[in-house]
Image 1 (spheres, rainbow, N blue to C red):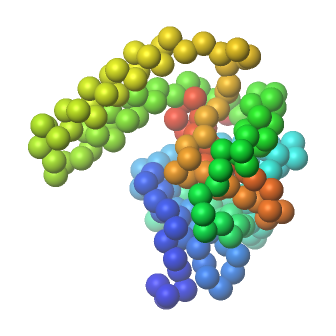
Image 2 (image 1 turned 30 degrees about the horizontal axis):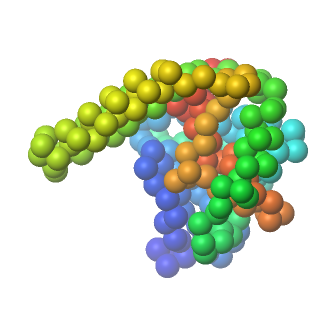
Length: 190
């Protein structure tokens, strides 16, 4: 069975490509509220309704997410990715479009990037404090600088995490939506 799957990502969730079908299965971390994943599904459906280039949810015979053994599971259409990294120029147009959309009908909350990075560093259990001291101090410096950032236009309601962004959609257009992290961490609200 494992030869039919290819793990393509994972941090807060496991992402697997089913090699026999153009499907990506995302399994949320145990304990992640299904309501968080439901909000993500609602948000992506809204993006799709706005004509925004995003990797689409895969059609299944059940409402997504499906909860299996305490894990929220979603299904997405697999979009083959280019071998080389996607340039900033290719992401500029969809990012601009994303930031110019009206706020979505899904309530989003603010995200504390520095706190999220500090939490990730704190979870590193195999390194002595002397090795985590530098990144922790650097996060503190960057957090202080971030407070000074001003926006020339309205403050964006989302940000994109490059490590999880899906650069292209099924139409071959650049996309950034499925890897979007929101200013409250996960999509939250109703």
